[in-house]
Image 1: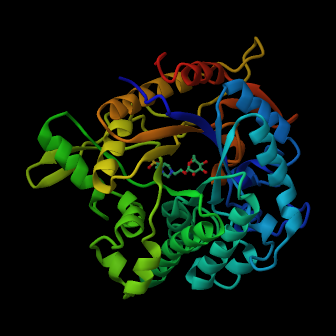
Image 2: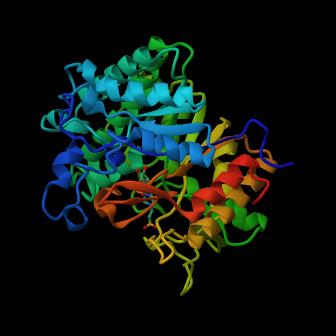
Image 3: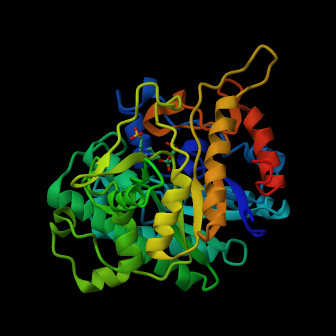
Length: 446
Ligand code: GBH
């Protein structure tokens, strides 16, 4: 027993975080261009103007993938390269992605496209962005055009990446683009339009390519039990799906997205009933999917208390990443188990990783034992999940290379490859070489 023979190993990235070339070949500006250029919004005013310059250096990214020996790459297509103002098609926008897809295929690497990783066209944002249903319809139109364009070359698609973040961080707490502060009905309206986008995107991709395989990429609170007693296990499961009690906001829950998308119902919580939603809309949101993608970083520890689940605070000195996110490997086991048992679909880990204070050592290399230890722990728990019957299909590491970490700019390094931001050179960290051995052995070296 171990990972299944067909288990896939990959790495992930997102368009705005790596591409740069923000005004080339007709690209339009997105909310992240505007937000990152607004003083005070990102670490030291960092922007994605150049990022890793992947737009001109895809060959170097390809080399990185080949070095890892991965046969799968998850990356984003920038909406504003293809529809600069959200409405007008710019065919030139495909040139770069044609190069990417064709060279991946030539190297036996399967492309996995993320259709939306947060880069709403600013022209649509100026009209209200996710407050408008039309934003959802236009994103679906874009998705259909992408699937049509790549039919025969690309089979795998993710619709939305983490609506929990682009609505929660973008429209509620304002920490991400477009930096708005909405609440109540307005916030739910944005959420509902994002859910509609997911459904409409799925329909549009299937219409353009009936052979397409489609999933979503969700995040949000995962709770792990303090002990392996049945009481703690059930408390952790209950807490994971109990909206608004343990997560910072109601929408920051896995089931805020997964319930409507996979069961056709919003969770039973006032936030999700602040506006009456029609059965027709719910039917649009509830589309047959091929898999669930989960972005897993950290969890909350829960125990069974006298009157229901309660939080077990992280003790002093609890292990944390450079970003101070707690290290909670067992989420790979419990999180995938809870979600598999609730929804029954095959699961891919679409993101998992950490930022470390990576730097060049005197010997000219990047030694990152913290990343290797973190991954070893998380992947062992993923293996345990797989062995215990969770239908796990694959793992994409976040991220292939260091990149623009949103409001944290280039301060946080999530890559298996170190990027020297002066020369833009990519250099394998120790973890890259280690991950290669994991990939080669299908996890036997863990
Ligand atoms: C993902 O989002 C994004 O998809 C990706 O673009 C990004 O680069 C990557 O992760 C790394 O950040 O409560 O302080 O312990 C991350 C979503 C939301 C994960 C907040 C961690 C809890 C942090 N994150 N979450 S904390």
